[in-house]
Length: 155
Image (cartoon, rainbow, N blue to C red):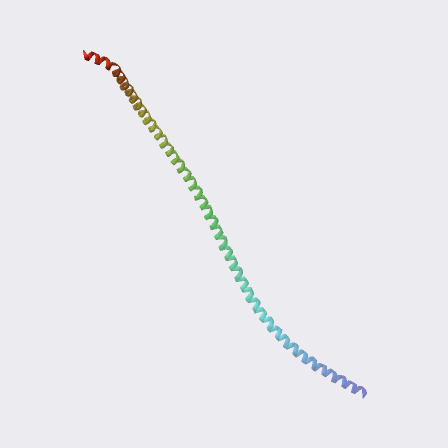
């Protein structure tokens, strides 16, 4: 019976081991349930994050499109302003050239007018000088002949 007793001990040890394995399985079951809950929670968090990432990607795409549109509009406005500036510069150059030509023409007309006035004044001065010399000549002739006239008058 010694073998029976050792068999009973072994069976008792096995039963204890089975009980411990059972409690271990219960703990594993609880752990598995908790891991399942954590997995579900993580799945929900990942789904929320994926949704946020998708929304962020859409917003980024929208912002990039808006930025590209704004950049194109800015480039168009810069080109338009450059064109206007070039056109205005060209117009100003043409107007300045026209005004300079008008001023030069006015100066030329003024010069012609002054030359005519100068010639007339020169003629008048020459005529006055001529009359001065005539008057001086008459005065000199009169002063030379005056003493002789007095002698003729004294008779």
